Amino acid sequence: MIDAKKAITTFLAGAALALLTSLAGPALAASEVKAVVNGTAITSGDVAKRQAFLRLQHTKADAKTAQEQLVDETLKRQEVSRVHMSVSQQDVDASFARFSSGNKLSVEQMSQILDRAGVGVDHFKAFIAVQMSWPRVVNARYGSTSRLSNYDLVSRMMQNNKQKPVTTEYMLQQIIFVIPQAKRGAITGKRKGEAEASRSKFPGCDQAKVFAATMRDVSVRDLGRMLAPEIPPDWKPLVEQAKGNTTGTRVTDKGVEYLAICSQRQVSDDQAAEMVFRQEDLDKSKAGKKDAGPENENSKKYLDELRKKAQIAYR
Image 1 (tube, rainbow, N blue to C red):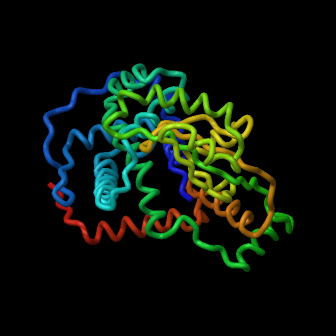
Image 2: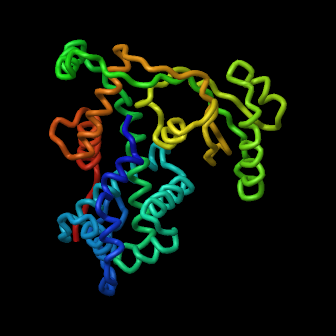
């Protein structure tokens, strides 16, 4: 499974220091259209912001590189919209807040720094949205898991001193304190308090549905067996840091949620080995190594197809 949150962190490695030391960027000239992608315009102002962003990453920041990156990003955004798999604005805002906090800055301070650097908050958040949404689309099309053959498993284990790697197996349930969309602003705080209070009273997975029935608009979903590398990135830290049989809460599109940990144990079966090896491949992909596994290849293949079908006009 592609880990979008870690991908963003890796992609932005080194950017924080540059952000903190950035001087005010030059004033932007009046924007003109530089490219049109399936009817969506990319302006010189967009290109200038992306160049500023690339400079923060200490990478090649010429206009052509910035423009082509924006063309690819526009194609991805259009496809994400077409298949209705975009993350919510709330998810994007939360990711931006985590990035700010991780660099010991408030959201307001990070926003000011981005503006001074010539990137801007909106441009940065648009980038985050694509980085979080695109892996969902790729995984939905190609599958989050491409099976490794027995030969591949044996070969990888031979490289690992003939030992199968060990990972943690969880049995999980999802507890959802539902919030109707129309009431999100009014009752989210109250529902979060109710969800937090219920954690200390949680009776265990066997009694979870009976427990949920004693409260209003609470549902329970059995997630079953999940290995550590399979856990979605938004939940993984909460599962790993859980004390007791529940995780901390999260506000999501459905409402306020937490996971119940029914059981956990260390396993080293073939499925676990495959998941660990695939996570290693994904880590290599993010580090830019050549033997990076299938996810990066699938993303490139998908994007190449979109480019072939797209109407792209450069000005």
